[in-house]
Length: 210
Image 1 (cartoon, rainbow, N blue to C red):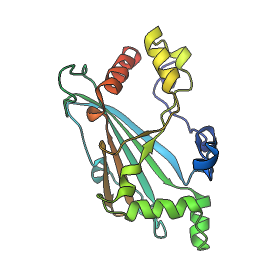
Image 2: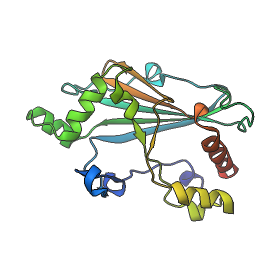
Image 3: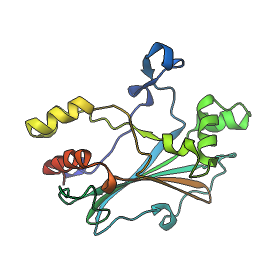
């Protein structure tokens, strides 16, 4: 029914495969450890152009993150127009905008209160505090996973492409931007400027998008 068309649900952190300790030697991946943020809300809308730094327009909770941003905002800016087959990227235009609002989990806050941050919290703190030009900021990866690609109604070519790359991490070093503000940190992923092949694949998914 209509109530189920506009909804989202939590994805367990352990459902994502990440590099294990000693990956360079073992080449083994394992389920992720506990998430340090939990998603609490999602905005999805259409826009005539990209809207970067979305958090500046939103009233976010002002809870103390104990040295870390209490709120994490992830802003995905997805082109709604067909990829330009001549130029590498158009840069801006009609967009789908998906904004994810996350907050530190109680488990993460408990570790911070005890001054016993996990390795994940230490790494996140280093990432947030790193300058934009530092190498760490260029190591950000995304993992996108469709759990029901065979049920959505994609055509055969699109479904095959999704199954091939589903759940595989990729770098967003040239298409990511970072913004900090009171009690929040925002990561923008500008899909308008993804590589041509990726944008063609994403646009092919629009046949079932509403």
